[in-house]
Amino acid sequence: MAESLRLFDSICNNNWFTNTSLILFLNKKDLLAEKIKRIPLTVCFSDYKGQNTYEEAAVFVQRQFEDLNRNKETKEIYSHFTCATDTSNIQFVFDAVTDVIIQNNLKYIGLC
Image (cartoon, helix red, strand yellow):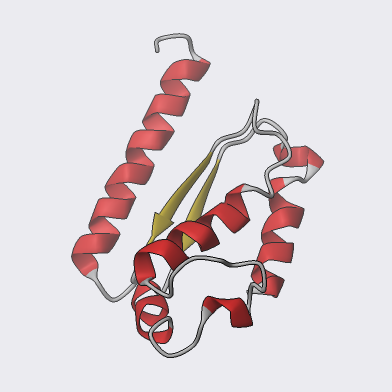
């Protein structure tokens, strides 16, 4: 997890992407839901104070990534929890991503 956060930080805050919104896929939500029942999130995040439930852990993990954004006024991060083997979930995420891309393009050309 620490490696993923470092990588995301380097991409998110790269000068080339200062004004570029990002779509963050947090994959393997099924594994998180299963592991959080057996392994406390404090193993990875010593500052975690929430319950060991999927819902609270997912919000915390998402916030860890989103808080790395040092350009909040010019960059949005669209986060999606996914399970690559769940085709209905993947279709929903791709539809959401398509909507984000269309909205950003409409804003860019002044139609939204």
